[in-house]
Amino acid sequence: MNQPSRSARQRGVSLIDALIAIAILSFGLIGMTRMQGRMVTSATDAQLRTTAVQLADELLNTVLVDTANAACYTLPQAGVCNSPAATARTTDWANRVGAALPGTVTRAVALNAASGRMTVSIGWTARDNADPRLLNVVTDVR
Image (tube, rainbow, N blue to C red; front, side):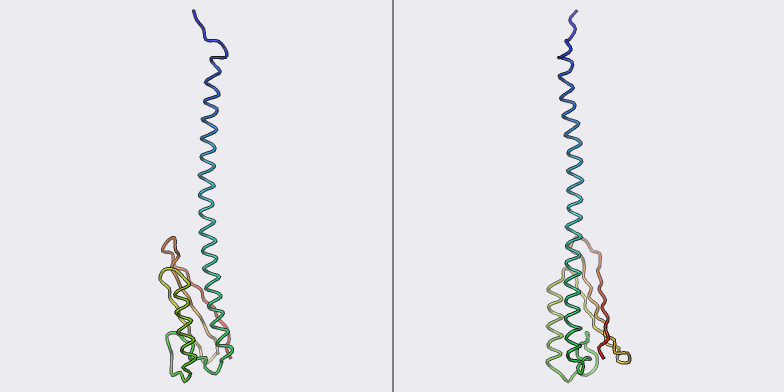
């Protein structure tokens, strides 16, 4: 009777070891790819939030410089505005917000005349899904 030698029986073992190693490596690579995708999504979301904060801060600082025309910087326009330059700056700001953020962009600026508080609200839709994002910034413009 022919019995396979010991070396012939062990030749298949190294092939199985290699297949198991490839399977483990592929699962690890898939996990790393998913993690990297989530990191890119998080970084993009953080960048968009930073852009929204910078735009809101820009408008609020403009109002702080021009407090006499603070009512002119509201969106939608509330009341009578006697400064065409302030209205033009507000319109330009609103256009830049729309261009800088993805998806459906909303912007609203409200002034509480009694307390002197101005609220800037900027909303947008995330690029990867339809989750709405909203940023509210409030300051005293008296």
